[in-house]
Amino acid sequence: MAKLIGTNPNQVPTNADLGSMAYQDANNAKIGGLAYPSSDGTNGQVLTTNGSGTLSFVDAASGGVTLLSTATASASSSLTFTLPTSGYAYFRLAFDGLRPSSNGENLYVKVYGTSGNYLYSAKEITPSSESRYSSTGNSNGVRLTNSQYNINAAGANGEFTIFQSATNSVPAYGTFAIAFTDDNSNLVYSNGAWKTGNTEVQTSVQINYGVGNIEIGSARLYGITA
Image (cartoon, rainbow, N blue to C red; front, side):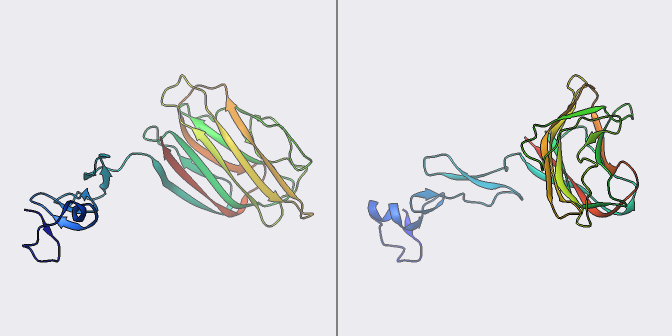
């Protein structure tokens, strides 16, 4: 016999009671018509419903963002991160306040492959105002800034994504966005997509200025699952 929780155990609930009150039958505790599991799940499991009033514990769905590594610049020539070759659909390199040792320097990102060489990259963007610019990648990697703009003491902020290739049949590609204020306090920004003709598995990513060090700033690498 079902019994109302916290009431006289001999009281028999009506159908209306069962739809809106908490009670317990021989198998499950029920609240508002929902049947809860009779035992706890394992660590990390979540509750799910079958759509017919029965709840159960299941493993959490895959997918999400994992912080893989962090790096802080201190007169550093570059910041380099290792890319796991499996387990993630793509990666996001986020950076804050990356300040060059001298103005008039370009900021580059290099994506390395299994050969140990960085992949020749070209970026493609469509400028829509004076605050945006278009340029192509070169032997230094993907160029995120233009030397006509001086990055002031605030440094550069942005992100760079890399879509993981599990085999050597897919070229490296991704997106980027960057913003900073120049030495005249003008906002400079750029975003778009980059690609490469190389078909190597990506193994690491590096960010650096063309000349000189990264005086201060930080960067973080995230892995994103599908």
